[in-house]
Every structure is written in C-alpha cells, then in structure tokens.
Length: 425
Image (tube, rainbow, N blue to C red; front, side, top):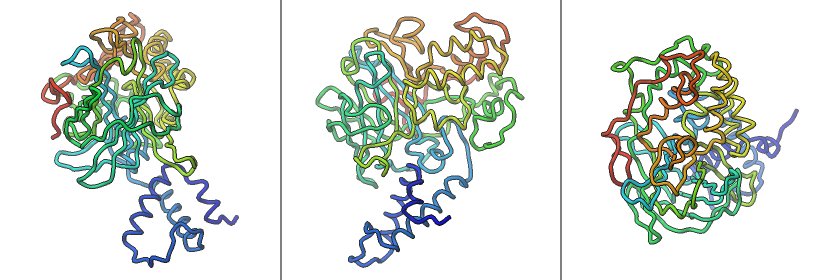
C-alpha cells in the first residue's frame, strides 16, 4: 500500500509533532536555505522530508534506551523525549507564615543531577486545576508558559481565573504576571511565585520498590518479573532515599485562600502541548497527576498513558478497577480496596480551605485542611493501609514488612519560609 506524506503524517501522535517542530526548527537553523524557499508550502520536497522525519521519530520513540523510572518518569515517552512535561509531585498546604494563604507546588522534569542546568521548555503549558463545586471539573485554573530559550527565560502567569475550556483541551486565559526564573516574585494581587530549580522533596526507597513490583519500572518493560517475589522493604538503617541526589523543576505559588474557594476543593495538575489536531491553537493534555503513589502502586505501567489523557470525572470507572485488581492479587480483602477508593478516587488532592491546618487525607478522614505537605510521608501512609491495618482495622492478609519503606524526610531539604522547598544541589 502506498502512503504519501500527507496520509502518513495524519497518524503521527501529539508527542511526535512536538519533536517534529523542534527538529524542523533546528534544521532550519543549520541548513543554508535560500530566502525564496518557503518551508510551509506543500512542495514535494517538504512532504517527503516530513514523512522521513516522522518515520525516524516513530522509530526513536519506541527504540530509545530506558533508564530509572517512577512517577518521576511516568511513561516511556515522558521519560525519554519530553521530560519537561513529566509531572512528579503536587503539594497543597496551609501557609506556614500567613494563616490567610495556601501554597500550591507543582514539581516536574525530574532527575536533574547536581550542577546540571536544564532549560525550561516553552512548548509546554503547565496548569493547576481547582474544582470548588464538587463535580471534579475545574472551576479555577492557574496557567504557566515559559517564554523564549536560554538565560533570558521568563514565565507568563495566567489566572487564577475561570477556564475558557474545561477537560483535556485548554485555552489560554488572560495574563496576570510575568515572572523571572529562580527568583521570588511578589505580584500586586497578593500572590507570591517561585519558578525554578529546587531540591526534589520526594523521599522513597524507589530502588527496593522496583524489586517488589517490577512492572512499575518502565526500564523492565514489556516483560517485567512477577510482583511480590520480594516481600519487604529494606530495614531502617539500610533503606535508601533514591531521590536524595536529584533536583527537580518547581512552580511554587502562595496565594490568598479565597482565590481557590471557600470550603472544600479538589486540585490536580496537568501538562499540555499544542498539536495540529487542535487547529484552534489550543493545548492538548499529555499528563495529569494529583494523589501520590496512586498510579505507581496500583496501575499497570502500560495503562499510565491512557489515564494521563483523561479527566478526574473518569477515575471512578478507570482507576478504581486497578485498585480492586491489585488488592485482590495481593490476597487482601475487598474492604482494603473500598477504603483506598473512598479517599483517593477521583485522583485529586482534596483540601478544605476553611480549616486552619491539616493532615494527609485529612479532609476525608479528619475533617481538617487535608492537602499534602512536602514532609508528609505519603508512601508510609498508603502502604500502611494497603499492606497493613491502618484506617480499616482489617488484619487479614497483612504484609507487615511492606507497611513502611523506612525512609523519612530530611529536614535539610526543606525551608521554613517561601519557597519552602530546599535549595538545589
């Protein structure tokens, strides 16, 4: 069957077009083309070139060598081709310095080694999405776009405001500020920003976790070893924080609570890119994240991408099935799955901005602020429910050696004042 350039390029996924755009820009810079040559005209040369580039990119996407993984490397594509869109952690917590404020933190672009200067990507739209009406559809958005490249990069902030479009397609809302990188910026509306490189605050013996559940390590795909051949974390004193030597990119916002809502809210974060599929110039979602350890523990790695392309309204029918299947597979009663689903689905971090302080899952369990603080030991909380008897009181089928990874927060990685995350290595 003959496939011409136009028909072939219609099958290129969004991720391929992001890379094609970058490659074409680089080629234009390196090839001494005549001014009269219009790269946008449908010439035979252009169609053939695009088809060739597309084929090459498809090959590269699926043949790239694999490396370390976690939700810090959520899919193979994000881990190897567009790390700037790879979300790692969302934090939502009460301001330690102003009781009228709340703090939102979005971490992304993981595994930055000490001394590495990794540029921010102007092709990615970063968003906090806030539901304050209880329907798991965003009512408020905060959007961030990096401008230009090189040392002169700044960030355009949009919102907080009502979204123009909801769901997996996003349109830009009106601009509110332009923020420098790696500097604290105080806006006139009482918002405070820091966008730059920080010490990765997440702490986890990820290396041992991948021995326990090999399927979650994308470097072992497509034929990982069976799970639970190893049934214990390393003991205290031997456990290691795999992420201790890495930095991460962060968007940190402190703002008046009233900008988020007046009571219970749900928050998640997304990354999006432009795609020819959306001819209106809007952005298409390529990753979504909120509750930590949800995808990593329960969901088959091959299902991560489908979940990334959905919204919280679809989580009850999608992610719940993976929780139920996982709990059944490890030999624990249905009540464990019911408890996890009740607090973790939909995949949004819940908070109550009318309450002064909180605890992890506190909105659902303790009627407090809830949210998630950088020092919250979310791995131990989740593991103690799934493999132990915390919250449920269910002791049937417990696996005590899996209820804690025996890694805690290192105070040196955090600050008591804004921007709260520690200085980069």
